Image 1 (cartoon, rainbow, N blue to C red):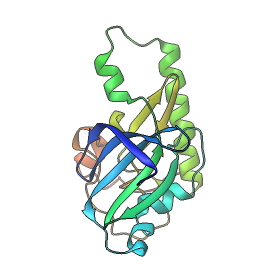
Image 2: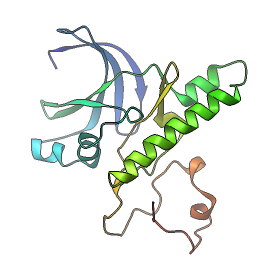
Image 3: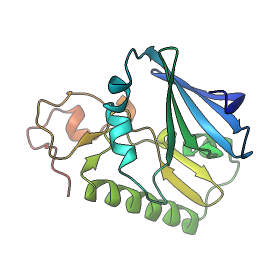
Length: 181
């Protein structure tokens, strides 16, 4: 972590906190996610679903994982930096977004999701807080609950944030399945 200077905490969640930081060598601004849980081996770190999935992805609408660091049993993920999440942008905005802006964002999110599904993963926690925005570019982030499409059940029954669950999941419909495609 000596290569980075932490500037400001920009988020705090169940599993960790996110900091805006600067790479001291290149001057690049990055986001560093510091995990709350202790990790006692490197193997444990690289086998996390978030790490395994993001290392296989390279798409303009999926946040880029640049580096994974384990130092003193603390795990850090170094990501490309994005200005804010979609929830913050909506909350702080005084006027409505244009139809063209919404259409552009939806298209980008769908492109990112199609890429993820093609690579064999589904997100399981898609919500405005996990869509990061810089200017007119939107990227899917927070792969902590990601699963492989071909992974074997049982799946955790409830994983996504309650207010963003599909009605068929909330109503425990038997018609609900994990099929993505």
